[in-house]
Length: 119
Image 1: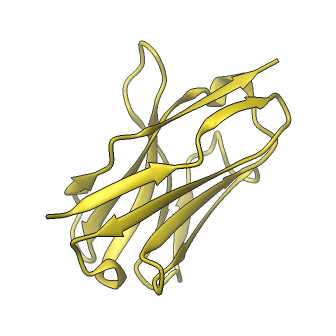
Image 2: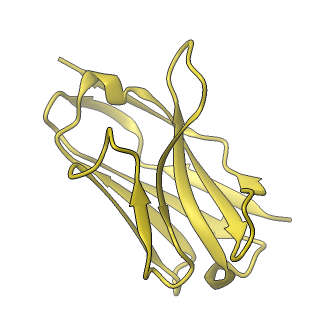
Image 3: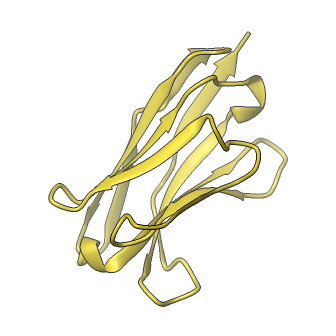
């Protein structure tokens, strides 16, 4: 059974930082591209960042470029999202997702972790 468990969310002030983690089990982590998505209240879920299975490729939404960094540790089956210079509009539930390399669709999702940025 595949499980993706996010942690590290919470309350931060504008301009502050948080680091999200997503621990994966039940899949061959090193064969999966990983991503972070987020969903703000009343809005659709949106892409935040992705990292390839080998860590060679990363991609970011324009709204987070230069502020967020995605990374992974295949030995720990964990993907991270370092979030700096947080803004109120970063407030959302953040979800971790996995897709088998070479596939286009993310098949597995975590339950999400809440990030709230207050001024």
